[in-house]
Every structure is written in structure tokens, then in C-alpha cells.
Amino acid sequence: MREHAVTAALTVSFQRYPYPPSGWVETLPRSRGALPLAAAGPGRLLLPVPAGEAVWVGLVATPGGPSSLVAVAAELGSGERVDLATGPVPPRFAVEGIARGDGGWWALAREAPAPAAPACAALELLVWTGPPADTGPGERGPRPQHDPTGPTGPGGPGGPSPPAPVASSPAGPPATLRVELVDPARFEAAGGEPLGAPAGDEATYRGWPLP
Image (cartoon, rainbow, N blue to C red):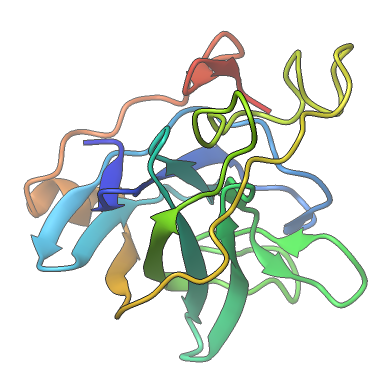
């Protein structure tokens, strides 16, 4: 599988890209495809991240469904835990990496050869589901999440897309998910599918050109 439903309202994927020489990025990198996932127990997945690659987290809300509040943290190779992001989905659709004090994000990678760059051992997600988002006249629910550099995003000729409505107060206990970044050999030994080559520029993310 290449996507995982954390709840009925939210699906996650992990988009691969070449590890940046500096160890950090200033914008969401172009994805080279979603990495496969393998179940390793209740609320636990294995994610194969090859040497020389990094990932960002894709967050997709169910069209017309309730909104979600998502909190994501990283467990570093050093054992330190770092909060990455907390926010509603929609409008958030991705988690870029570990925020840097001077701007941009450290890449999420199992191995981090760049000086001072942190290595990531695991990601933890907490997802609260809220009531259906309020909609205005003529609207039928949240708009699909998509690449902001696509034809209707801020970087395209159509100008900015209006943000989707968001439920204000998700309630109840969160669904939890732990994703462990592992060597591809360990992933296959645990029953995961063989890891193919990264996708080319023609690949798409949920029907839109990848950023």
C-alpha cells in the first residue's frame, strides 16, 4: 500500500525525493512518488527510506467529510522528540520537515549526511476528527487537497485557491499512528513490497502535478 487511512476522514502518504545536499529545503520539494508502507502492528507502519532520499508527509481529507486536526512529531536518531506541525486538514495538506530557526525545514530522512542535519527514526501522528465543516451557499464540503504549484494554486495562472472550510473544534480522543523509517532490506524482510526506482517528472500526486 502507498496510502494509509488514519481515520475515515484522513489519509496519509509519504512522498519521496532526493536528499538535498544542504540537508534542508525552502519549499515543498517535487515528489518522486509515494513510498510503500507495511503494517507492523496496530497503529504502526514501516516506511522504507533509501540512503540518499528524504520524505515529506502528504495529508488528504476525505472529500465532503469532516475536517481533522493533525499533530505530527519526529523521533530523531539521537532519541530527541521534535514537534513538526499541528494544524487543521484542510487547509493543510503536507508536512514539509523539521522547522529551522532561520527558515526552511530540515529534510525528513533516515540518514542525514549533511553537517548538523538531524536523522529521523520515526514519525508519530495524532489525528482528531471534527464535525463536518461548515459550508457556504452553494458549497458541498471541503475542496480536494492538491499541489499549490498546480494550475489553480498560488503559483499557477488561476491565482490563489480559496481555503476550504474547517471545523473549529474536533472532539474525542485522537487516532494515533507511528511510522518507523527503516532500511529497504529490513522492509522487504518484514514482508513489504520491493522498493522500485523513484518516479520521473510525469508522476502525479492525487491527480495533480507533483510540486
